[in-house]
Image 1 (cartoon, rainbow, N blue to C red):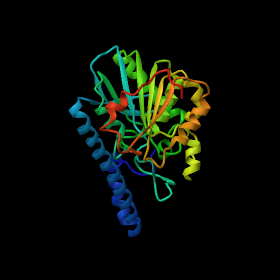
Image 2 (spheres, rainbow, N blue to C red):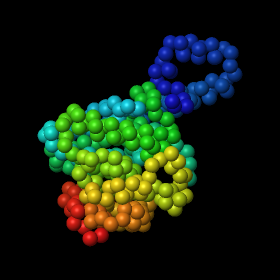
Image 3 (tube, rainbow, N blue to C red):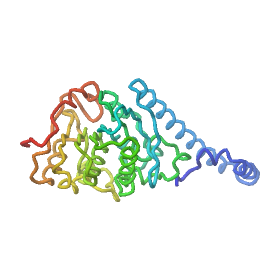
Length: 308
């Protein structure tokens, strides 16, 4: 559970009566702290709602409709355009979002919903018949809508077994609902880690593309002096399990955080494979330079004829 009050609690009659008694019995500084806590909750929920509304406005012109998917442990938000049931779906997996705060990125935020949902922007440029954007656990859902979320779940444990099971359940849900026979996964940022982990688990992943993705968060956090993701699976450890899945990894030439070093580390762990490629994209960094050029980037080969 969250370590603060949610909206349903704040408006509950019993809570209001208790608050009235506290006004009489407790010092003013206590009321000030309580008011601050309630204010933080209200502000966090409001920001989540605004980001959700922004995502809906972004998806609407390309006829991608919002759907909340219930999994075994949590709820996930998706935006979907499905024109051919029984076909193949391009599934875009969002990045980590607003995970950590502070100068040294040591403390979790109160809400991991991204300000700039790059994966959704990419999905809107995809002209395929079946295009689905899949948010990560706890994104776009306020605490009262998804009480299973906690800060560790989107920070250190963002790639935990439980979170990956939820993402896997979401693909099962799509497969059962629409009769999909396979998925092309496109992961942005941390979503690339998710794509690899799903590919290692499933038999219906046809291709994998990653955009500005670490692929090995253990070496990445160590090099960038970011807190290690304790409790998270690491894509590099599953590289051999996806060696036969066609994949193309895209890195921004202007990206200071994700470099070819991250890809080379993952590639070495994979061993012999002709199914993996990497391309550096000029004038692109971690978030910028991708969206307008995405249709042409999508046309680059994803097959098992690579000599890399």
